[in-house]
Amino acid sequence: MTPEDLVEIERIRQLKARYFQLMDQKHWDEWSMVFCEDVTIDTTQEGSPLINGRKEFLDYLLPILEGVQTVHHGHMSQIEITSSTTATATWSMEDMLWWPPERGGQKIWGMGWYFEEYRKEADGEWRILDLKLRRIRVEVNGKQQFPPPA
Image 1 (tube, one colour):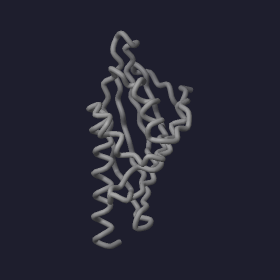
Image 2 (cartoon, helix red, strand yellow; image 1 turned 90 degrees about the horizontal axis):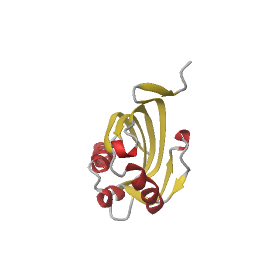
Image 3 (cartoon, helix red, strand yellow; image 1 turned 180 degrees about the vertical axis):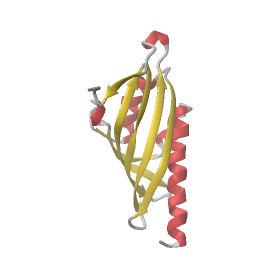
């Protein structure tokens, strides 16, 4: 690993920090720029469709999170620079979501991993090209939902 690789790894860590903060702060225009235009989003484990494209992802996610308070954490990143313009990472994750009473008032707590690929684009910025979210546990209102309790 070179010193330049370490700089690029830190830039990717900063990108993911923006992903979490901007999502939780609902700064959607800025948040959208952490993704490549041709991003693929795979949260199919949770019943969501496979999504192709930054605009398509925003169109799908924003109505779901309308009025929802969220806190997302990413930990223990393992980032590998695979070429001068590509990288991969695995992030341990935890998120908490609170729906308002008028939308059911559910409280969700989830844990798992993000598996991601990144591309350094023509403007020199790293962006998320492929995101897979795989949870190992989800609780709704304090009761385990996934995996189904035994």
